[in-house]
Amino acid sequence: MTDIYEFEGKTLCNTNSVLGEGPTYDPDSDTVWWFNILGKELHELNLSTRAKKVHSLPVMASVLARIDAGRQLIATEEGLFVRDLASGNLTFYAALENDRPENRSNDGRTHPSGSLWIGTMSKRAENQAGAIYHVAGGKVTKIFSGISIPNSICFSPDGTVGYYTDSRINRLMRVMVDPQTGLPSGEPIVLVDSMNEPGGIDGSVVDADGYIWNARWGAGVVDRYNPDGLRISRYKVPAVQPSCPAFIGANADRLAVTTAWEGLDEDARSAQPSAGALLELGIEVKGVFDPVYVL
Image (cartoon, rainbow, N blue to C red; front, side):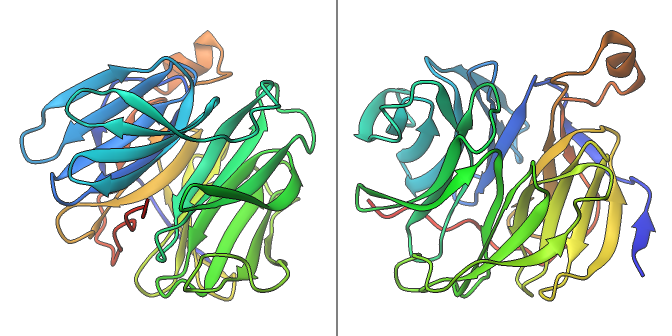
């Protein structure tokens, strides 16, 4: 049985992104980072000072990984770039489907080994036009193909299990992973089949106990699953299109979630002013910080 909770959280940032995505937290600077993909923006919010910045980007980008105190790796429609925090300058790092300009990056996350999984999709969301790649040391390896909308890329804390979904199919997949490299070591199996339920499986994170927190696009909720795929709790949010959660705060004990207003008509947007905002659920969690990417 799933326990259902009303929203008791707050708005962390009310800048309404068309497509808010890819949140991550930097514990060294107490800063939350996330993207407005379609708006070509990188957002930055310091939790201590409440200082907010919006950085314009020359391309659509969707995933950010810490490298060190002065650099970040970002995935974009034109490949992977190293971003200098001080200047904002982007330095090309690795190609990602440079022969497919009709595609862009989407969901992704750093594995505990320091490698990265990143998904791609058609800018027009064409069927099976995307894939999921493993990136390590500048080498890009395709690991799953025929993906329409890659999402829910996340890993168990020990790095032995990986998760992902194709949101068009709406099945959360589980795959064994080499904890030393981040490469799959087995074949994916279906962990959660929600093809016949309202909404779609979008971004996910895994907490310290191995439980999966998933933003359910179109349903206005964040779901929590145990490692066996049983949904044990559901948290409502005041935006019908939550896109991805992230553990935030000095102890990774808070949960934020990005949202979007993409595709909503004027009446729908008026009915949910939080659409596109960065929200916090207002519950205590046992999170883990996203690992740094190892160049």
